[in-house]
Structure formats: structure tokens, C-alpha cells
Image 1 (cartoon, one colour):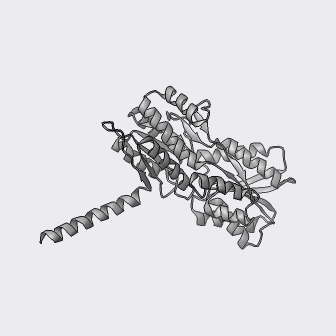
Image 2 (cartoon, helix red, strand yellow):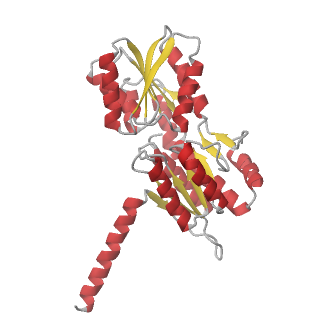
Image 3 (tube, one colour):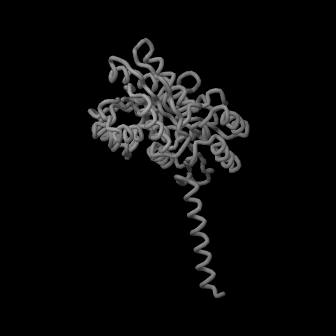
Length: 344
């Protein structure tokens, strides 16, 4: 075989290898560290794969560019604690400097967080916590308070009360449990009753089927509550198909592109939005400080001063939520555009 054909085959092999890496890694940002310094390597591992994580990756990339570090995002393709653990162990073997994790199931992931910390890898959680682990800090929504915010919105939408059914990927996820508890706390003493919550394992088709089953079996339902980002669009689509728009209130979480479209058309009554852009940006910012300074308390103090966020007991950093409705969606979208994102 001549030299030219060997060269062509080598280029093709390299191209195939790069394609394989692209499928494996959702987003990788690499910037040059100052000359002579070791580049800090940070990985953010989500609890699933949905458009909710797109703005998180934009924030992650922005922080990595500003700090001159490498940041990588990985999204598990299924709602599997075992798969998330496998991904974490992959980066543990690579001896990265810091890992941020949106925990699928704290009982499963908590012990590996402890193992990471014991091995010298700095770990924080974001979006979904493992509070009983050795993680250094949590950045994201206070999910109990977010659930309460949803409950307050429900009281405005259902002043006379009524039956509510909820839909979520996995009720064992810490953020799901906390949102449900917060919703119940806010609606305590009212005529609003959260009758049941149905799991869908983060399968949109299953989420929609759950909604259809509720609409068929419970003609007196007054509100449908979507607790994970993809649930809102599935609820709206099922309600519209059943010809029940306007008859059943729809309250959900987050502002995925389809949720935004339904809000614009008045087909979703309200959504509790988080700040995934901040999850990505602040996770990289804090991990970088912890790694470079080598002093957690000093890093947290500097983080407070620079970010404007307060570090609460347990090193919880609450990025907050707000309620978006068809009435204020356009103003909200302008704020997203200023960050370089289109959804949240």
C-alpha cells in the first residue's frame, strides 16, 4: 500500500475516533492556563439529558473561558443511578481536579462522592443535592422553597381549591422529594389536595401517558403539576389533545423551548423557573477557587464576595426561582437573551 493511501486511512481513523468522543461528551471547553501552570480540569455531570441543561453548559463554558480552565459536561442518557456512578468513576480514574454532580439518587451517589473526596478530587453538587455526603457545597435551587413557590402559584390559580395530580421523573431524586414536600407545605390548610404523583423515569412518552391516564380516570381534576422540566410540555400536549385547555390548570417547572411556546399561547398557566445558566457558571467558579486556593473556607468567602450569593448553613448556595406566566414571558425571554440563552 503506498504512502498516500496510508495517510488517507490514518486521517479517516482519527476522524472516526473524534466522532466517537463527540457522542460521549456533550460539551467540552478547553482554554489555555497561564504558561507553566497545570490546567485545572473540571467535570459537571447532570442527572439526565434534556434541553434544561443547554443553558447550564453555556454558563459552564463562559466561566471556563474567563478562568482559563477545562470544563466538560456529561449527560447520562437514562435516569439510572448506576449509569451516573459509572460516569463518575470514569472521571475519577482520569484524576480530574473537580467534579460537580446533579445527583440522581443520594443513597447511591453519596458514597461515591465520599470516595472522590477521600481520593483528593473536590466535589460539589448542583441542582440536586446529596446533603449527607462529604460534598463541599451545593449550588442551585432550594427545592423545598421552589416547591413552596409552586404551592403559592397553585393557590392563586385555584382559589377555591381542588384535586391536583403531579408528574415527575423519579420521586426518589432529592429535588423531586423536596419540591413535593414544599408544595404540600404551601397548600396546607387549603382545599388544594395533591392526590398522587406519578413517576415516568424521565421518559417523555411515559410522562404523557401518565397525564392521559389521569385525565381519563379523574374527571374532577383541577390542576396538573409537572415537577421536572419535560413534564410541562407533555402535560400541555395531552390536555390540548383531550380538548380540556382552560378546564384544567397547568403548573410546571422550568422553561424548556416547548414550555415557552405553550406559555406564549396561554396553554400553560405558570411555571417555576430555575437558573441553570447559574448552575454551570457558579459551579465552575467555585470548584476552580477551591482547587486553586486549597482552602474551602477562603474559597467560599471569595465566592460570596464575587457572586453576590450567600452561603447558607451546610454550604448551600440558593440561586432562587421565579414564577413565569403568559403575562410576563416576553420580558423574561429578553433577560435570557442578554445571557446568550433562549430557554431555562
